[in-house]
Image: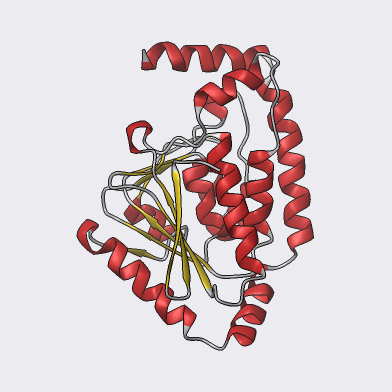
Length: 249
């Protein structure tokens, strides 16, 4: 379990809060494991009707922790925590709502493809610089992205790495609503409460039909992961990451 993820209940909502503000919620393997466990546990808990995922003010998530990536890129153990979390998103049986404020990089953006409702503040920017780092998009975004955003908007976001401000993300359908920073959490929790009041079987069935073939999605996540790991160990990716780390220093 990770100290940087807070899991709590508010009524029938399970709230998962990424809480590593000093690193803009860059996700470690322990954070992934904690969030995956919480999502999976919600599937068979009748007291949980909806999941909510949040960050901290100004930072939903800066993406994967670069130090973890460097371990893999230099031949270390890659672990399964990221894959487990992505599969938990893909096979989730309960609705998922996100509250996004500020930084939303990499997985901070691709999580939204799995959310039933995403709320974001005007200062939020969604950014997926995967190819800039010599790697490819993940979380099944190569499958969901074109279907949700359209081929060209998906290419601009996921391959070109073009940042999408909140208003543009709303325009193309990545997020449900743009709300003020001081109203974000209250509006998200109000939406969660509305969902929790719905007849659960009808809601679950409707959600499952709209979500489509989860086996196909998990297969795509697996395929992306295979390419991701191979590319991450390449000279091209190592050079890109070293350049990134040098710029940060």
